[in-house]
Length: 386
Image (cartoon, rainbow, N blue to C red; front, top):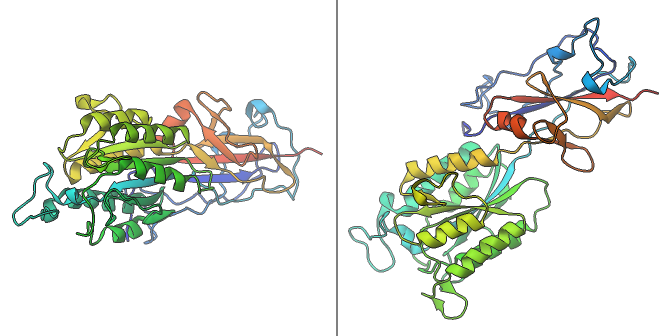
């Protein structure tokens, strides 16, 4: 399947240097990638580009060239400390879609049944909220699953009113677009429920996210069409706005920001706004007074997802350990498209972890990454002087 990306494509290039200047070498640049198609022209899809030895122009020898910029790293030419290629990449975000699958999703965008709709089945087919939403989700997840690790947790999918499944329908993993698309097929089944147990769904989502051990940034994406109505005491038709708002607050405290998508013109504006704010990811500028992402059709949701994904593009890069025992991670220089980036926690880079196997770009440098202005990041390891 051909994949185009809503997110910029990146190759993280890691090379080590064996001296204070680079000896002459034949350098093979990485393939040029069309960011709109993620295609390098070889007929295949780009997932993780193989990393080539790239020597930034600023590091080519000149008579008065400083040794690795301000750090003035002193090294000596050593046959055992030459240029080495590594595989490394930007850390993808882990996003768990917490998707409302209650039977009201079979109604139209105004929560009305269509011709032939009876009981709990709105019978709106392609015009149903469910079809409109999953069409957009399928498209976006399939085209971004090289840059985002997606997962899916349903609520409103149980035969017991206000029951919630603990385990996700699709656990978070890379390249999950197809798996989630398959999970959408045949849903919502008429064995589902009319309740909207938002609080329990968020709590279960946090329980699952706590089991993940990867270092990736993690988010929840709540997509729902109705007012939370599964209170803890009387069950169905008991307003649970306060409990749901608290669940999103607790998720943020646990380290998981929540994006809130409201599906259709079905009410619940106050609680959706509160959850969006409590989740730490309200819509920038709150257009129309809403802090949540209001969507009525496939196009609306595609736009909203594009905005959401633009804010989760990570500026954390995995650089790995030093290439060999002659190089030091404490003598690295970071480049963005061949231009040196200073070590600056405001607008440059700094180490992301105590092991110094990751670097994070900040401020204007990070902005350049998320906007696609910087398309590759190179890290040069300086040699240890004996």
